Image (spheres, rainbow, N blue to C red):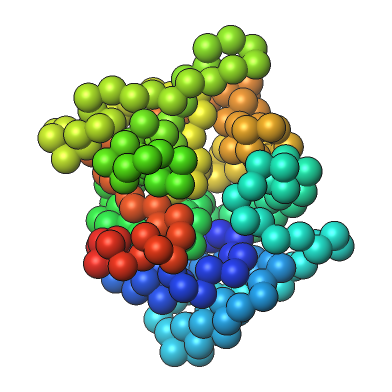
Length: 253
């Protein structure tokens, strides 16, 4: 199992991400960790190195790669920056994750951004579905809605409406994830952020630029290669999108 993600200036949440990673209900000797630290201006790299020094012997391997872009920019979630720089760069970094999975001959890549806090049993739950692509449900609406209670209106699962447009899948099951029976799967056309991908898909699909993000390119590439995409809406992960949200969500595990 390869657990991997790009890391960019998230030292305010990384200690909690590392806590949840360390306490995953999965044999650490069967886990390879791969972090690509890019364009960091804070203490993120030092925190990852500290974790590696303390725990490396417990895992199969821990690799930290520093890979900075030639053009310097700050990803502050503004759409003009994301469309002009971030999505190109993230596509390049995420393709490195796919390649790493293939080179390690890992059965799966678990790609979860470092500002996402996941449950201890997430790997076992996602693996139990025996799917090539399956994500954990999370909400991305915390910064665009007037109330935290409305963040569910922007989940990480979307359906394709036509050739150029997607819409968020907003249903009772998405809003009230805690009422779903365990292992409730929902098909979708676009997902990401916290996702399990088989080695087979890693060799057949790739990331690229799209105005809605590099995940769109990947999911479209995977579907064109014949793979279905699923989300376990009973397995919720918490997206901590800002330091202001951390105090409310830091105990999620």
